[in-house]
Image (cartoon, rainbow, N blue to C red; front, side, top):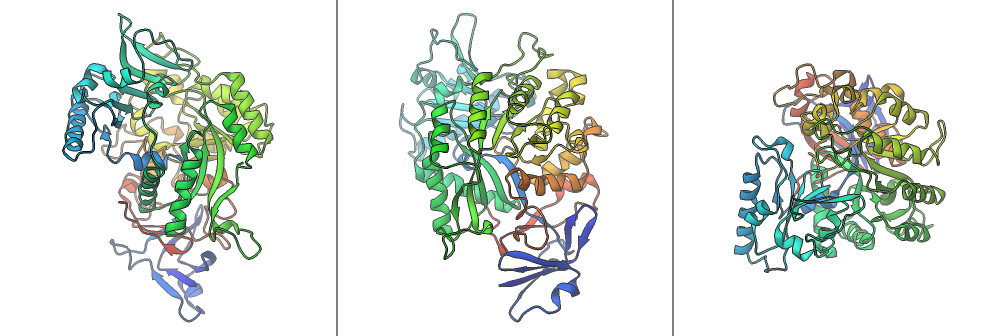
Length: 568
């Protein structure tokens, strides 16, 4: 099947655009002017006028479809039916939202006393308009005392529990310390209901695990949302290993029932257990392993063209520290606004070394969550044992990589270490960063401009549902480092670390494709590449930067086929 897209502004690479492109059997075969593409089309070819489909009337901007390099599709879909704490302005507002949800669930008959867990997410106390504090068990008991209630901070690394949830998890005054985590207690030794990092697993492990059908429904909601935003490929961390097979089956069910969908590279955790990594390696589930392709059995020779692969094994995903907002990110120096803590590592250095070296020896890429400068330094030390100057063939990377200085960035550049970053994080973090780490370190953090200048390979994403999933918002933050709603701060937040639109788009497309070993099939509009495309109503390369956040994706194309662009 041949298709032609014309009357467009097609982004080829920095400073290079054309009007039109041709697609044959799902792949781009030619780019050029309208005349170049429309002349000589075979009979029956489909012609797509990029001006006619744009509600604004002008020809759409056509770019490679977005590729979010790190998020949680399952978690994104799971938010339905939870207490939504995002945007709440106070403790009292979170409580009211929780009470409202519980009341609605009770009326619908979905709650069973002492059995059904009420969950929530998205709370960010740093953005409360009044008292900026964590919720405690007394607050959570106001949501309900009949049902166990757990709400996670927006970062997902701190949870707030009611008394019943603590009781069901066996957490009382005698609860022991947790390595790599914190059970907060008051002056009398009574748990406050705030659990950080590894301690959260004590409660989460008590919550009944979702069925495969529930996982499938969550993934489908996440996929639909992705397509509506012009995202056709993701690196998704949906499993910590114990539920790997159930999650894999859910993905396969979606593809087999609905056909080709978005392209997923599974970022897989191990729940701190080396035996789970062993099972991945023993089963041949190493980075790049095809897990579902179209057709499932391959071609007549039983082989799959790379263009047919929609689900594959991605990297091993590990954690080295926590989050800036919860002050669990591991810092070299004490926090400015809480000098009694530097945060802490959540994984022992020797164990991080052991897992990384075993994975690398087996041919598996490793990506590690590290936010604080001590956490980033520890990860780079570990990577130094499996990489060398300019030599990182497995493309090991640091996820988030937020608090850095020049020395850490230069170490990354020397060994070609990948940075999987989320520009949208500044939407929350710029309001607390200087208070947490001080102006000097803040000035060299979230350092996307320096990364580009040093040649550090970078891929953009959102960590959704932690942050807004919209790539165009992420591009706005990378380019302006200002709140699009009010232009704060004037001139941008440490503007030396801004990037231009081309750099941001490339990191969200070609850079993310490189991070997942897809650079020869995704991330560019050029002959031979898959026709995964996003049609945008405004030309973000030419409009004023302060208007980028107003742009909208109007069509999404996957392998040359228009995708449904409406989430459930």
